[in-house]
Image (cartoon, rainbow, N blue to C red):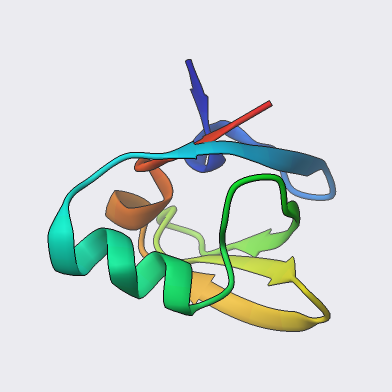
Length: 73
């Protein structure tokens, strides 16, 4: 299983499934990351946290822990 955390800078991926439960999953979906959406990884901080992505026309920073919950293809 590949997650958003595994995607390299400058690459795109399509969201296959969101893992997690309750409030955390709802928060990720509220940010626009839903099944089938294309996500482009813009940059990653030097220590790997946070990850900056472009989704649905805007830029979003995600914690590494949240990025691990997003399964991509």
